Length: 330
Image (cartoon, rainbow, N blue to C red; front, side):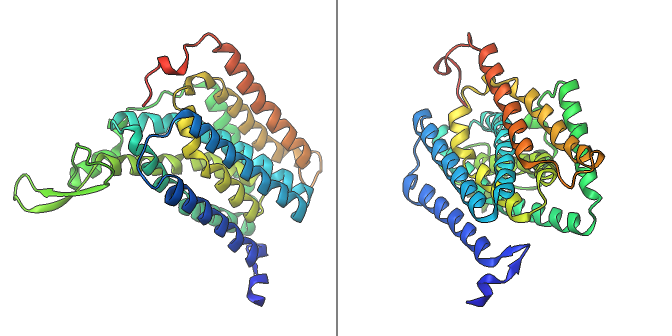
């Protein structure tokens, strides 16, 4: 059993295996037990699920604080809060994708579940690659910080208008090169049907699969912001990956809870822009002040203050908005 205590990316192997076991258990309970049958997920259930996932993420952060120390715990919670906010921004894009393909709420959970599995693998690859680069070339951290500052400034200065889903080059490529049907076939990603030219039975990708592909691509794009952001908070691969994954695990529940009221969080994007500028800026500030690292407690406190201000201001400015049931829900 000595191999369990072998070092892997700065932490004993048993810590990584335990975390992976927790993630697998949560996914099995979610899809294998709670949502084994296809059904619509209401706002009340999604709020409950989201609360459970957030509680589990914070509980894991408390364990990190207790076992690895206060600084590691605060870095985890800061990363968790940042990633959760970026995930809220992702909700809007997912809603656009489901609306474009006319995916009923009945099948949205299935798409999001398999999307999360893909995200877990993709984030592991991107974070592992990022950790290897940062450990080998420490100056890359300053590139990450500068990128975050420029991204935040861009978000503040320019109105980021969403592009039409139909204009996505990957979607055009798939439709041009592969057999694709515009009709839904229950919960299936692929369906076998006669080819319109040859008449032979061949496999066709359904809109459910196309939605899944675009959601995965959307996460890769969002990871371009989130991965540098978490590395600007801490370079510990264990803290980086666990905070990312725990925040992402609740994305499905978060989507069903917020899809109908996402417009009420319009000013959260401004808060997120300010937060990215702060996270990138603190890397340079720490150097200018001769500090080894920006204090973790100050980083966590400022992060929570920025996000809380963004949420509170958004809710206050949209207090006269119509109730969610009066809006069209994807």
